[in-house]
Length: 289
Image (cartoon, rainbow, N blue to C red):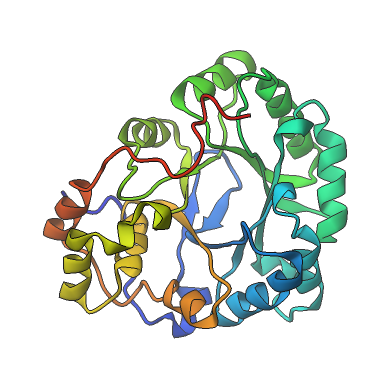
């Protein structure tokens, strides 16, 4: 197995200029492949964590209404010396707003304190509500208005994506899904590749499943003189994914970005492919919501 995408192997000291952009088939989307996620980061803590990430060189922030830290992200966007146009900002509409997307979007933008959003996502399909097509139509209207540059979804399975295409004629630019060596979602990734959808990974370290203690992953890490976490993140990049990291500890924030000084070879990639267990640490998208 060979890497699907070439990823630069350089020091993270110039991270902001090192991290490549991933493009979707939809025009206008160019997202930094390394993102900083803030799920479960309290609003009073997110300021320092996000500011640290920007200092290191991250230029992609992923938040959501559910996270309750959009105000903190907004405070950093307002105070940083990094130009706004250099920071890719994502937020999401929650399940209870599928029928009220414009108001939910306005509220998120007010909390973030920005005029134009880079990427707006439907957080979950919540199929029992049967409102996600309606929500998707509203996202497309927001994009047409110019207030959001790109629109996408999270946690959508192939059947959900097919329904969006059948009923609206438009597929998302991005699908952000749980993805790790323990949950590789090959069928879904293949659908993304065939249709120009960017695969974006959350929970890439599957910490709740014990991935970082896996002996095979540890062996690959030892071979390269890096940590198991860095191997798991580098694997995502070499598959062509956008990957979201998360920490509030400065050393870990920096270590999670130190992915450009080594490259996994075919033997490493084969080993990691063999780790797939179909193991979710988050909810089942077909049942949640």
